[in-house]
Length: 159
Image (tube, rainbow, N blue to C red; front, side, top):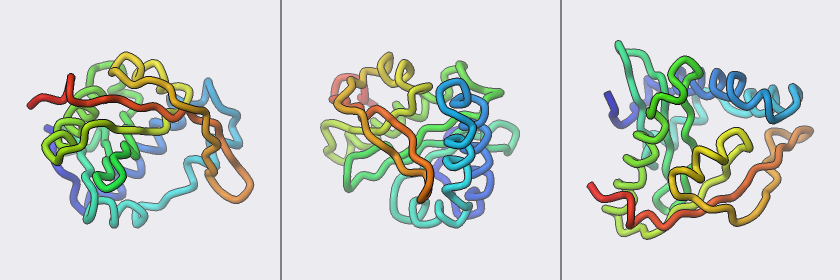
């Protein structure tokens, strides 16, 4: 079931993020970068996003298996993470399309995001095109390269 996130979901959202990073990005980034990426957030860091942005969660049997985050003010998809046990089953695309539809209703015509290398093909298939490589700082000592991507959402975000 897809729904808006609530503050009590923050811990499960964080655990989903960590599982997805460790399970899906390890083939594309060194272990030090993965651990820096995983430790860069706490459950509390999701509270402002849940309260002020658009954060969706997908639940199965009352457990969060995926989430996505949209900042409508910047027209930026800040996250789409799927638990490794549910990857490649359409859950990520379901969340992405729901975020796009919500953005479209708000009058947003295009979205940008930073894709980790393991997610570039997913976003490409969803209609996003590369704009530039970016350095993403996980913490003061660790950085990762990501690909900034953009999509005109009007064509595929109809509700």
